Length: 243
Image 1 (spheres, rainbow, N blue to C red):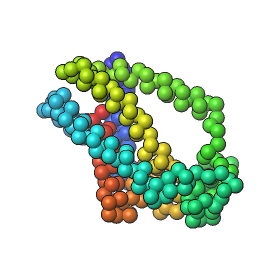
Image 2: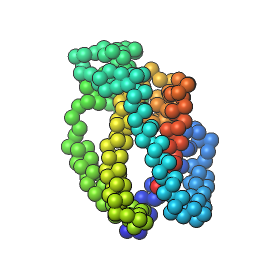
Image 3: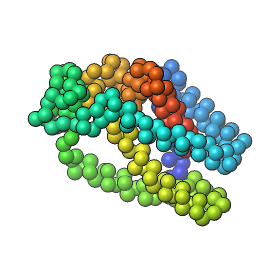
Image 4: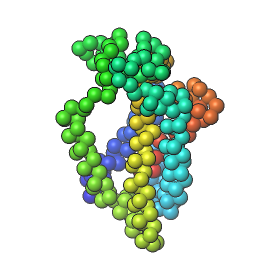
């Protein structure tokens, strides 16, 4: 169990460094973040032990559930959700069209024909809603099956054995099962909103990944939506550090 766990934790630390480095446009050094965060996590763990982890996980989970429920609603209000953005080629322009009848609709690819370089908009009918290739489908199936071993992770076993009662283990197990589905909703809606409206975003946002770009868009909106972007960012960072 130790070797897979080392790999798993290494990915989490790498993700933390990549997220903070990208969000600050490289002002925070990737390796400095990793070193500082690792020592900070070890310090917190040594001072607080498993009890502090349990308390912080509870607070963090509450915030994350609120974020998971709020982001799809905000995206739905701003961009129309699934119905307003996913259309067949025959239905163009869609309700959200605002640039060459493509921005606002999940129905284009922004690439130079024959290359992977960004360039003039190349309209490909139903590009993002086409059937995945066989290798992509197989990769998703293998990824899903690999999650069956997640319960054997040492930090999961540790939490199971520190519970006082069996009902607490059952409750947490059920919560983890539901959380997987709950977390996918904002992830999918964020990706769709990014792809559908990328051409109307600022140039700097078009070059970012979906999550960072949408946070930037929310931040520019200000008010409650801007506040939501900061909470979502902190929740993501806290989630990685907690793991």
